[in-house]
Image 1 (cartoon, rainbow, N blue to C red):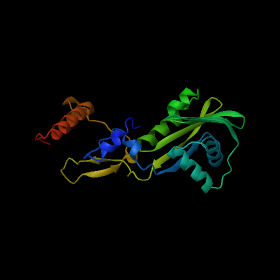
Image 2: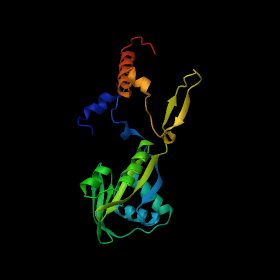
Image 3: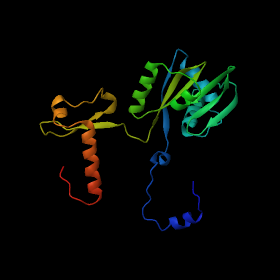
Image 4: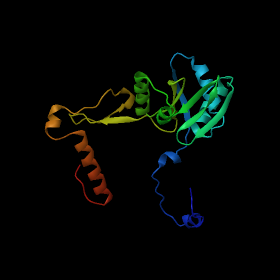
Length: 212
């Protein structure tokens, strides 16, 4: 939102533009990767979600509708459609209130999510996916996992103790990260490491020499 039109005129003299919400600047080339349901056939779930997202304009809704057309699925009749920016959408499908959106929206709509389903969704989110939940009759019935095609797969870089070249490990292959008892005893906790990393980063930004 640009509040002052003159700001656009002054923008031509800028050398650097710093943005603190880079998520709004990405291409948003998302693709539907996975459909998880509580027993409902995947295509039936997708068609019902798409019927609620019909009038939505965000990129996830666009991908859902694109995939629905690609699969030649028939949309269900939906009424009383409402859209809430940053949360989700709701409407009436098959005579029942239906909600589609993020975790916060499910909670707001009074839809409980099974622990195993929520844990699985969080794992996908940790691996770089954006999860869109859907539910009705008081429960989250499933979710859609979407991924930005323009973003590379996340990974961690491992530095072997023998000094050999570092290795990249896909985040999806990581089951857990922990410091050994020796590291913890030496004060090398995860929190301490993060604090030192941030301190060194800020020092470099100030032009100071930092020992790695």
